[in-house]
Length: 415
Image 1 (cartoon, rainbow, N blue to C red):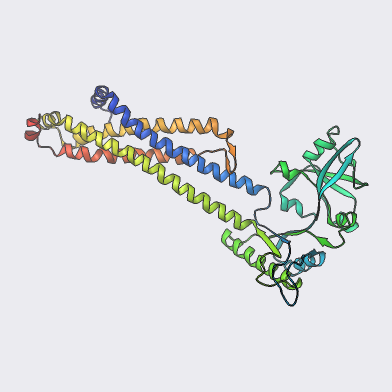
Image 2 (cartoon, helix red, strand yellow; image 1 turned 90 degrees about the horizontal axis):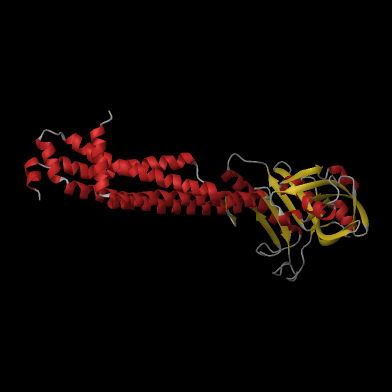
């Protein structure tokens, strides 16, 4: 039931102690403000990490080779290890039931590309049709490479949106146009885009068999890429990918006569391990943000409790008169609690609205390394405020309980 007299008393008390009430409220508002901002940046880090791993398949395993660093079976260190078509074909055959996407890659850096009077230098990547899924590329025009292109060693290419703009900008749809690479004419069959943008769109794709033939690659490869079929959960996916990676390295070391403990000759990367590492880091930082924010809120709540104790001390005689006139302890407790909850709620919601307003206005503008669009779920923020109000009520309860236990005769003697 709404008691207008009680609310008048509360507002009278606040008016008499404006500065004290304001400073107490600011400590509460700053706590919720800091917590929301920190949680917003925690979500921004999560967004940034997710964006980083959108560039490629999140469960991709890659392998490349360098030189040996150890003597093994009479062979001296310093040998260059070269991946071959045969290596890819064996892995594909042995693990075909596990693989989702796979692609060999033969790469040529800074090849000269010409179209009419325009020219540029871009990387040529000889790949298989599956590489579109491995790279998370999307098609703006036309199609990606297909297996017919690879079997027939077709002189076809897929260019990026960036290369389209730089070389063929005068043509809206470049499908069917021909560009010159190393003096040979290649037909453009597709234009791709990459969510990574920038450097990710400085590549021209052609069938790996074509690239090997045009650039005298014979059966050499630079890298092998694989993704495994999805498992039941992330942990199982990680176990499967680590097992596959170890089997892959063991096979390549055996076939290329590399010492088992040579850590340089055969190299792999596993994006699942990177995903786990970054998400663990993100989770640790988010926990730290929660800790700092909650500690700040607790400091504010302690301030509310102290102020309520001061109020009880100041109003001791008034409380004694109330009890002498028949006021019940519950009404005394309610009076103190109402004021504590009112101050906590008003300034708590004020801090919430201000912090979320800042995130809403400036969050979309933030896009730095690993932090993108800091934001917070409104429901989480709202629950936090209600917990804050509950804590404010708890903070006010002990002073209120102390006030309710004051004996009228002792209260009336208070100076």
